[in-house]
Length: 62
Image (cartoon, rainbow, N blue to C red; front, side):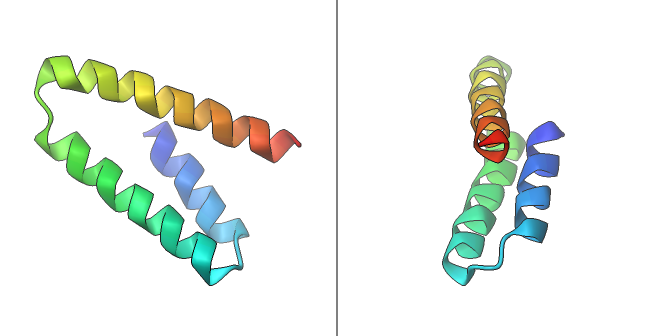
């Protein structure tokens, strides 16, 4: 999934342990949500992850 790719690339670039732990926590929560959501919740989840991906892309461009 694109969000996993973005989080993975952030993990590779980041050197700060505090930021790494935050990224890993987000990745764990996203994996948990993906496994436990009903379909209607999944649609909202996809919109949420798209927003996260757009924010990550914008922050990389800056």
